[in-house]
Amino acid sequence: NKFLYARRLFAGLAYISMASNDRLAMLATSDSAAAPFGPIRGRGFGLAMLRYVSNLKAGGGTDLNAGLRNYALRGGRPGLCFIISDLFSPGGWQMGVNALLSKGHEVGLIHVLSPDEIAPPIGGDLRLVDVETGQAQEVTIDGGMRDLYVKRLDAWREGIRTDCARRGVHYLSVDTGMAWEKVILFHLRRLGAVK
Image 1 (cartoon, rainbow, N blue to C red):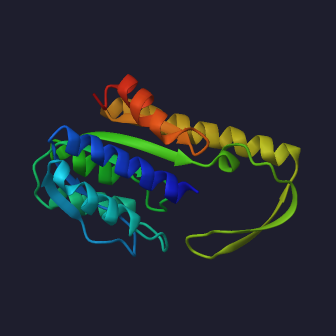
Image 2: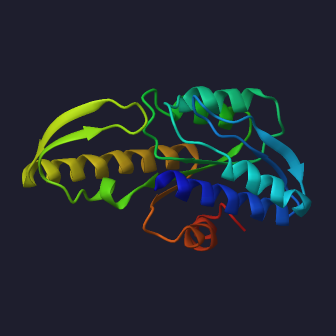
Image 3: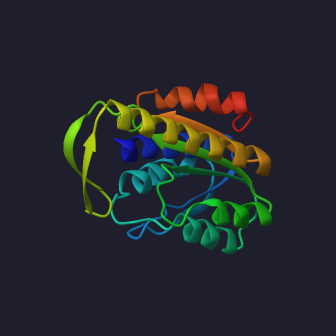
């Protein structure tokens, strides 16, 4: 479950911020998103932060560009800003990241995919339903189609990695089969995004 995984990353990164006595603000961007949390400082807000994260609901589409632009324009002080997303936003994400960068934020992009999205175990005639929009698509998947899908997914992820490197954005692609603690304690530290 990508949403559960993303919430765990969200809470883990927030806890590190609070334990370091850094200023913390949190925002979920979707059509049904909750109000922002914070800014706060200190461990005393731990339960409130966990309550905020546990009450987040998945559903509806997400205009990631609009959500990130709105966050950038709220006028808060610039700092380290983590974006946790599968990046399946029809409008893209680049303009939103540009807005954050132009306001002086350091940006970390955590790209979350499920193992089934990376290497689909399915084949044959299928009806796929988008869990966010409810739209259905009839497809036929054979070995050649699966190989083409994997190549396009790899090219898409590499394009994101290249674009992030060019912009100075920390990029980490993870799948939900990886322990979320390892993402924070090892991979983000290796990138220099978490100390």
